[in-house]
Length: 322
Image 1: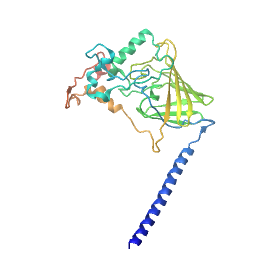
Image 2 (image 1 turned 120 degrees about the vertical axis):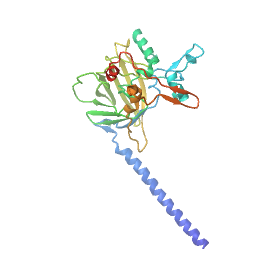
Image 3 (image 1 turned 30 degrees about the vertical axis):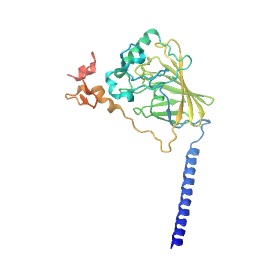
Image 4 (image 1 turned 30 degrees about the horizontal axis):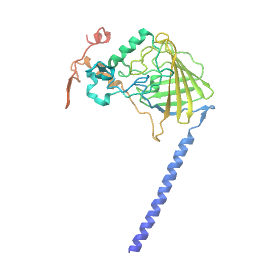
């Protein structure tokens, strides 16, 4: 019996090993097929089709910066920038609401060449981040910001059009490689016209409105914004993304940002929905309710009461409140 049992065990083990080898070979083959199913080129040009994502802190602040206790701070005990503390709206987030440090993505001297009056607006924007940042309100992010927000985006490439779908707010844009007419009015995402310079995709982007920001630090632009993007393949899974930013109403000269974009390699990777409009409804319009939903929160260490405030001179609130 012992010999029969041992023989049976050996048989099962051999069978299991064989099945495992088949599964392993199948996985390897499938992975290889998936890789080879994506053509290396489209019309003789690098194929950027796939899902990509930046891996940096540019959405917090394009410039180099030390870690900060929060995006919105106030003076602490000592009158030094490093001693500032989180402001009331973000106090309960603790370290989860902190801003990670960064080496920055602004090229050259690392400075954004603001005109003096524009720099004052940027400083004020940063102080009123919660009230003003279009991202907080789920507005379309604009370009280049959509490229380095902490969400993936998907590129679909053909010979005369390149479509980019962004997870944030279901945003999208089309890069036209053929001759097209511009839009009838300025837009959130701009009008993108591309061409190939060797293996580098060069995209000229114009027709912006002035409603988007470049990051959460209050860096902004006007409706005179003009971008020249360069997508250069560094490897099959890395694109070097370089942008020249020009806006004579806001900046004294053109300036550049640059960063790598990485292909998401998960075998089941796909864009998921981040329809943030409903996430921002209570923040933006909660005070229009006759009975506010969010007005009190009590935790282990603090109690927070919300007093809603209508922005002075806001025509929408004045109209809706009638």
